[in-house]
Amino acid sequence: MLALFKRDILLAVRSGGGFGLALAFFLILVMFVPFGIGPDRAVLARIAPGILWIGALLACLLSLDRVFQLDAEDGTLEALATSPIPLTGLVSAKAAAHWITTGLPLTLASAPLGYLLGLPSIGYVWLIASLGVGTVSLSFIGTFGAAITVGIKRGGLLLSLLVLPLYIPTLILGAHVVTRAVTGQNPTPSLALLCGLTLLTLALIPAAAAMALRANMR
Amino acid sequence: MMTVTDLDCLRGQRRVLSGVSFALDAGDCLILRGPNGAGKTTLLRTLAGLSPAPRGALSTAPEDLVYTGHLDAVKPQLTVAENLTFWQGIYQNAPQDTLNSFDLDELADRPAATLSAGQKRRLGLARLHVSGRKIWLLDEPTTALDADHVARFTDTLQAHCNGGGIAIISTHLDIALPQARTLNVADFAARQDRTADEEADPFLQGAY
Image (cartoon, rainbow over all chains, first blue to last red; front, side):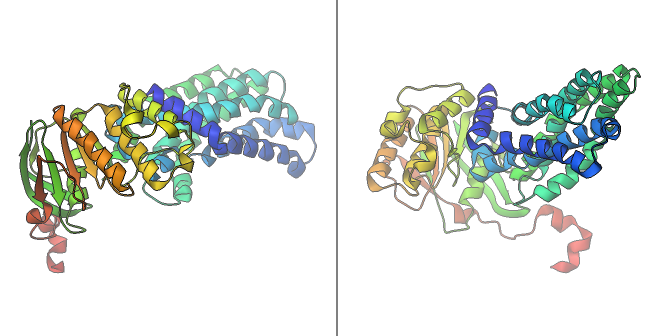
C-alpha cells in the first residue's frame, strides 16, 4: 500500500497535471473574484470564507477523473486487483495520495489567498483547520465517484454530477467554521461536526469504492 | 494442485463457457486454444477472480495466482527499474535476476514511455517473476515479442514450471514446452447465450 501511495505521488509530480492544475485553478478563481465583485473590502471579507471553500472544492474536482482512469487504461488496475493489496487498501492509498497532491497544496495556498480577499486575521487558523480536515473528505468522496465512473470513457461530467451533491455537507460545515470564526462566534462545534463527517467518509468510502471497482472490472 | 470443476464463465451478463473442468499438477503447463471470441480471455479472467463465476469450483486461493492481460500495466512516466521497484513493493518480493531474465538490463534507466511495444511487453511480463506466485495466468503473452524473446520467455516459463509452478497460457503461437497440454476452449462453449437471470425473468419471456 505504501508502494502504491508513493508511486501515485511520484506520478502526480512527474506528469505535472495533478499538482499544478488544481492549484492554478484555485489561484485564478480566487484572484478573479475581486474583479467581478469590486474592490469593496467589507464585502470581500464577508464572502471570503465561502469563495475560498467553493474554490478549493472545485479545484479538488478537477483531478478526480485521473484517480483510477489512467490505471484502468494501461491495465495496472486489474494487476493491482489481483495483487496482495485488498481493494479497500487500494482505494485508501489512492485517496490519500490524491489528498497529498491536491488537498494539502490547496489548504496551504488558502492562507495567502485569504489575505488577497481581506479575510480578518482571526479567520486564518480556522480556514486552514477547516480546509485541512475538509479536503480529506473531499478526496475520499471524490475517489468513490471516480471508482463508480472508472469504466466510462470521458466520464468527467458524470463524475462531477455524482460527486458535487455529496460535497454539499462538507462545503456547508467547512465554510461555516470560518464564517463563525470571522463573525466572533465559537467555530469549534462546526469544526467538530466537520471532523465527524470526515471520519465517517474515511470509514465508509473505502468499502463502497472497492465494491464499485469490483463491479466495474467484470 | 489446481483443480477446476464444472466452472461457468460470464462475459458481461452473457454465459460464454459452461462446465469447464481440468486438473493441473505442480510443473504443468496448460495451453488454451480456440478461435477469436471462444472465451479464452474470459476463462483466464474468471480464474484470476476478476470476473465472477456463477457456478463451479476453483481449488486455488487468489493469493496463488498472478494474471497478465492484453495490457502491460506499465507506467510510461516511470523508468523500467522504477516500474519493477513498484511491483516489488506491491508484492513484497524482490528477486535478483528479474532484469536479466527478461533482457531488460540495458533498458533499466529508460523511461517506459520510450520503450517499443515488445520491450514494454517484456517489462509487463517481468511482473510475473516479481510476484513470486505459483500459478501464472497469461493472456497472449508473446504478442509483440520477436522470435529470440519468445524463445527466451519460453525458457523462463520452463524454469517456472520446473520450480513447481503452473502456467495457463492463451496463445495462437506454438510455445515449445514439452510438458504442455492443450485445452480447446471451444469444447466448453455455452449451449445458449441466455443468462440464468434472464431465463427466470418473466418480462423477457416473450423476447426469445
